[in-house]
Length: 257
Image (cartoon, rainbow, N blue to C red):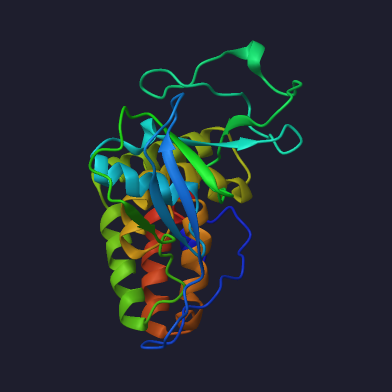
């Protein structure tokens, strides 16, 4: 489906369980405390299968009503497992301290606190930075993995296409497309380069639409959406809207004539 202007290689996603099916949710338990020295009160985190550091931070941000971007988690790791860019130390608000001189590798006689990436799964006890206390957090915080849609019905496919048509029809998007096409023709570019340049123009509308349907933001969300559309690829109604979308964003290359 070229109308998505995908720049990634599709990957096979795990299917959702059948509706109503009982699913045993695997989980692990974590201890959560502030990134501060001395004895700290702790909360328990029930991390369900598939959930990551990013999911924990989103849940904490909801309880604390703060931007998720200001939060981070650290974990004690031995230097052979330390893989972050810098060692971290606590300030009164849990902020990262230390600069380039603290970058690893460096020697240590014991474990060090390292900042975890958002796609990691913690191993045990974690420390929270970016807030001054654990107020407003329940004693047990259950964290589920983010839902990602893996399939669409025909009706859902058509509704999603309608939302994309509306998003791509906005004046700001059409103006950006017109500027791209003028530049493209002026520089006599090869037609094969248009989809790659088009993907940058479509980022803003796609970021508005895809998450509403259970997909990640592009480019990853485009791969997920392509996979979800597969069962309806040959449907004539879906194919008709593909043609409309291709014309709307210039993938039919009619603007070259």
